[in-house]
Length: 221
Image 1 (tube, rainbow, N blue to C red):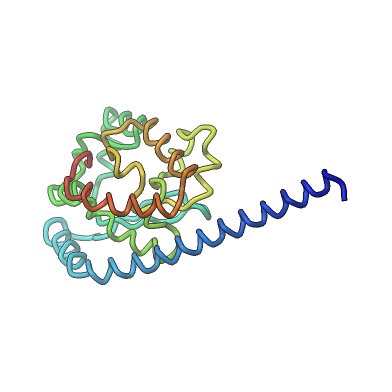
Image 2: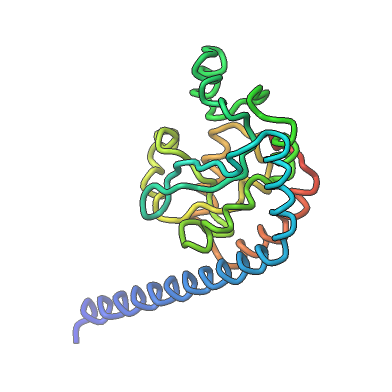
C-alpha cells in the first residue's frame, strides 16, 4: 500500500472519530438540556405562577409574549413573560426616534414601553423563564448564542451560516459577560467565540456563572 493511500485512510478514520465525538457531545448536551429544563421547571413552578398572576393583576393579559426568532432548524416562537405594555408595537411605530434607535441596535436603552413589573423581570432575567419550554421542545439549548430575529442576521456578516449551525441558548457567553452593556459588534464576536470554542466544559462554566450574573442584575434593561 502506498504512503498516500495509508495517509488517506488515516485521515478518513480521524474524520469518522471526530464525527462520532461530536455526535456524542451533542447527545450529552441534549440530555443536559432535558434534565436541566425539567428540574428548573419543577423547582421554579411556584415562581412562574406568581409572575403570571402579577402580570394579570398589574396589566391584564396576555401573560406570554411570543417572539419570532431564528433557530438551527429555522424560525420559531420563543416564549417570554410579557414585560411591555400591550400596545408596545404601536408606540414604537409612532415614535421615529425610538424606531431609529431600535433599527440600529435592536434594543432601546430607555424603553418607555416596559412596564414597572416588566423592568424588574428583565433586570433579573425572569421574563425569559418560559423559554425553558422552548428548551424542552428542542428549539433552544440551556447554553448557546443569544437568540436573534431574522432582520438581525445581516449584522453577523460572514458568520451568518455559522450562527445557524447551533441552537440559541437560554444563557450564554454574552449573557455572562456584560449583557446589554456591550455593543452589538461585541455581542456578535462573543457569539462567534462561543460557537467556535463550544465544549461541554465551557457550557458547564457558563451555567455556573449565570446565577451570580442574574442576581447582580447588572447590564440588563
